[in-house]
Length: 74
Image 1: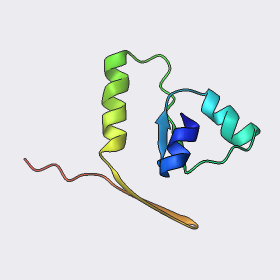
Image 2 (image 1 turned 90 degrees about the vertical axis):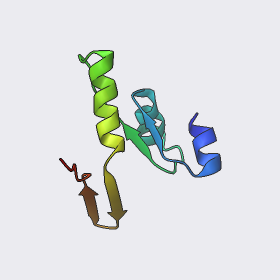
Image 3 (image 1 turned 120 degrees about the vertical axis):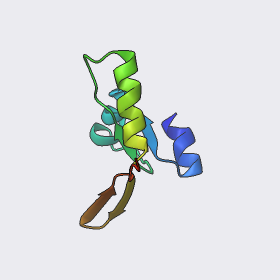
């Protein structure tokens, strides 16, 4: 999966800690990996947190990360 993400320049979002091993300990090339650690939560709660993560707008620049949460209108 890491190879396929690299081929397309995609950011890999995963809950699989083995990707941390590949990227940090073994130094594999990657376009970006987001590891979601949600041990102990139900599948539904994990899905809710994943959706929350993917609904934010982030700008990552050298030395700076900006995160914008969506505006919820009532």
